[in-house]
Figure 1 (cartoon, rainbow, N blue to C red):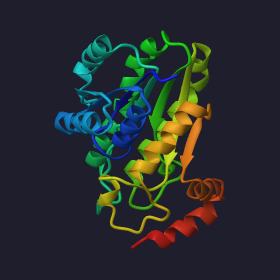
Figure 2: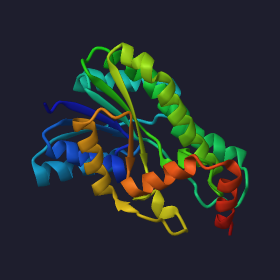
Figure 3: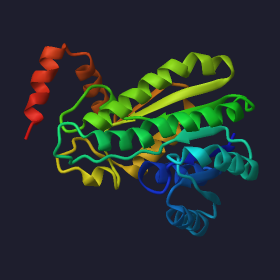
Figure 4: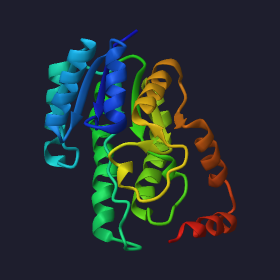
Length: 252
C-alpha cells in the first residue's frame, strides 16, 4: 500500500511529524516549505535515524507568479503523489487591535489564497491517480469566531467552506477531499499563544493520528483530540446569544 505523499508546510510542527510518520511507514515523502534548511535537517534526521529518505523542496505558496512553475518541477522530479497535504499556515495571535487590515491580508495570503492556488495546480495531477487525496489543514478555530483571533478564525472558516464546496466535484473525478481540524497542538505556532490551551497534544501524536486517518479511514473531516473536538462541535451549534455570552469571558 505505501506510496507517495507530498506535504506543503513541513518544516516544523504537525507537518514535520506527519512527514516522519509516513516515512517510518515506508511511504515516499516529499516535503515543501519556505525554509529549505529545516527541510534538509528533517531529511537528514529521517535518513540517519530511520534509514528512510525524505525529499526536500523550497516552496513559497505566497509567490503566486512562480508557484505553478515550482510545483510542476517538483512533480516532474518526484513523480505523481497519491496524497497532497496542504498544511502551510501562519498566525499572529497577540495583536492588540480589534481589526488589523494588514495582518488579515497577510494571513489570508498564506492560510487561504496560497492553499487555493496550490489546489488549483495540484488537482490535474491528482486526477491522474486512482483514489488520490487532497488534504487541507484547517482548525477547530474555524468553527466559530473567537476573541483576539478574528483574522485566524476567518481564514480557517474559509478553508472549511472551500473544502465542503469542492468535495463532490472532486469526488466525481476520483479525488477525495479531506479537511483536518485539530484542537491545540504544541508547535512553534501555538508557542506564541499567551493563554492556557486545554487538552493540548504533542505534534508527534498529531502526526500519528493524521497518518492513521489518511491511511485507514475515508472521513471527510478529521478532528482531534476527540473530546476537545466534541466540545467545539457543541459550541458550534449553540445559539448566538449563548455562545457570545460564553466567549465574552475570554476578554482580558
